[in-house]
Length: 365
Image 1: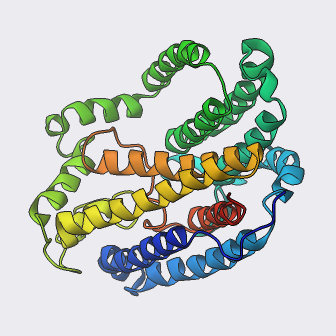
Image 2: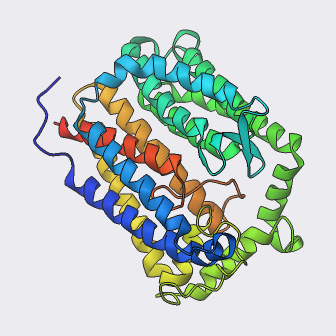
């Protein structure tokens, strides 16, 4: 291990801080009406978001200053624990159902999503596994099937909840790690064809997923049903124009747009801050991803490089899916916008992961 630099990547710290600050402002703006209606306190959601942001920043500071090499040692136990949590959450009476998915552990509104922890645990484990077996990663049976088997088992447990969105983010980030490690494109392409067939099967197996696909293709065919969310999202984005209606001036947050503080917060951003505000957030994410990939390229060892790729992949895939859904380019999946959307365990865990990425940047050549 080379000697660490005195400071982590400043560009990443600035972009993370700016996105998080914008997120807190927009969570309040998007949720104030809903919070007052449900709890009689318009600050309900932003106060909770602030608490988790503070916890996440504290965790980020710890992981930013802890040698990322320690995650090699804990990668296997962390993966086993996450597998155990994914099994426990499926047990009726223990797992909490929210949004139609049994994906939470906790009491009342306090809880964690084991699938969120699995995303990070999976990329850490794959980074360790593939960094130690680089000579066999080009082999289909010995090199590619073992990591894909572990990934497939985790995805299957997540789909039993069911939570296709989180599973898709985990698979996307993990495949990016596997490809970066040296897996042959021909092997991945062949498996991708099987994956597409399986994805179609998952859609056909659940009527609500099929409704989302048809709503994505023509939301106005069922404007009060399956197409309602995307239509209301577009109604928010359209009037925003170049500069928006003004901070706090959204009309769609008045019980028109479902989940304005979580899945569709980018719609409120676009409505209130316009193309300039939405573009600014995308630019900040682009800076974060650029510096993250630069960190991966210049990491001093293969494990650090693959781990950085995995963490960047989690953010990139989630941003792509969320914004794609909001602007009508992808079917509704229930994925939040990283660091911006309201969310407890997901926010804290993502800041923890970004702390690891910042620590890797301290060792970059």
